[in-house]
Amino acid sequence: MSLIQIKSASRWFGNVVAVNDVSLDIGPGITGLLGPNGAGKSTLIHMMSGFLAPSSGEVTLNGGVIWQNEAAYREIGLVPEREGMYDYLTGSEFVLANAELHGLAEPGAAARAALETVEMTAAADRRIATYSKGMRQRVKMASALVHHPSVLLLDEPFNGMDPRQRMHLMDLLRKMGAQGRTVLFSSHILEEVEQLASHIEVIVAGRHAASGDFRKIRRLMTDRPHQYLIRSSDDRALAAALIADASTSGIEIDRSEGALRVQAVDFHRFAEQLPRLARQHSIRLLAVSPSDESLESVFSYLVSA
Amino acid sequence: MSSTSTSPAPAPVPPAPARAPRGPAVYHPTVGRLTLRALLGRRRALILMALPALLLLISVLIRTQTGADDRAAAEILGGFALAAMVPLIGVVAGTGAIGPEIDDGSVVYLLSKPVKRHVIITTKLLVAVGVTMLFTALPTLVAGVILGGNSQRIAVAYAAAAAVASIAYSAVFLLMGTVSRNAVVLGLVYALVWEALFGSLVPGARALSIQQWGLSIAERIAAPGAGIESEVGLAAGIILLTVATVGATWYAGRRLRALTLAGEA
Image (spheres, each protein chain N blue to C red):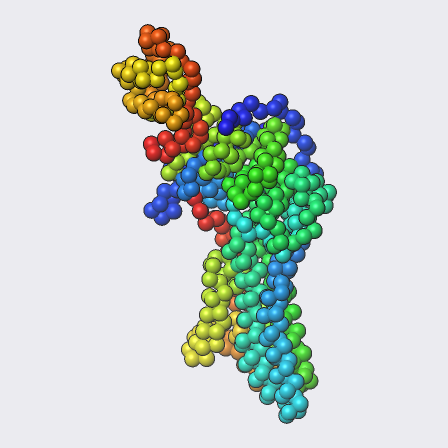
């Protein structure tokens, strides 16, 4: 069980603040680090993997500072975003070299096991230069797993993967998370994070914008409008009743959907008022569904905040 | 799309594989192997072989045209082998031992390991020195023997100078490869502009040149009348070579320890 702690960490490059006073703990299980491109995700991962010193604050692994502490790599497996990876080696030579660099007593066996885990045994004797992007990613993964790290850091691991490879890597990461490893991956693609992470940390413009389950985060944003799609026995009458109430800010009659699109500004009040108003006006509610409860919408709110 | 917020019951983490008790203190065989393969990759090996091949070709031509000649030997070995070939091959081997890895980011795989940074540097230095010596000192000796049959110990003297200069060049250019993305250009500027141009024009600059420090050893080995002269004495030459090598190696290790990845943010 390993814990990465980021304590009031900031990092600036000249005048540019890449990470601004971020504090968060990353423990066992899968954590998704979500944010648009350029939000500071990679900077955070570089700090967590010891490749960048925080300009202020501290980044620790199990209480020990990671920066300039080579011993920390016994616990860390890193899958970097960049592609450079000794293209003149074969996949198995590459993973073997990683096992040897970790000082493993039986590097050959460890390398074979890691290549099996990522299902790259068949192509292991081909040069990395000949690999597809997905294969490279899997070999990177094998190199990060070869020493059974308790922490796995992955920078945009799904970039360039086809859907099958993506599912395979997701399964693998779920397994790692279920084993009690601390798995952190970054992504700017909401679907990936939503499918994989039980817990997300949202980084926007270098700041820690939100933390937790994405639904909880969505609820936290109660001061922002929520969108609902409502079908009823009398859409126009319901629209008139709802717009008269302070809990809504806008209603659209979506004729193609045959439904109302309602913007609710007061989440709790709206949840109370909707059934009450429907009953008062003898309108039957056929369907009420949040139409923006996807990470995409959570994210766009957070980004525009 | 719904989220998978419930994770399966935690399975126990498999035991970590056993580790060897201690890592190497100076030379890490895996780092050495990777460095050597990078240096002797196809294109680089051709560059490394071109100058020694030219030296041997010139030597054979001169020998067959004019016969054994100590003055020609000293001029070729001093003017081409030591003054141009050794620094140029030093640039290729020294910067090539680490620069490309830093450029393409693959150095991450070396650095994200529990291996001391100074071990990575000393290993790369040893490989760069080995490669530079192989492609400079050895052909210098052979060329010297072809040109003058090692008369007045000229061949051995220049080969020894090439060997010790290989060490210092490798260390200095390895440092350049560690600190700068333009290491090859910087190295060439040092080798060609500083050592060759300023060295021949400005007397002070000559004393601050690895080539001259190497020559101080050649001067001692060769017979007194062989015409080998250095700007610095033997003791000063050895001290300066040692200081440059140790200093550059130490600083390269320090810089590697503080190497940060360019943030794509």
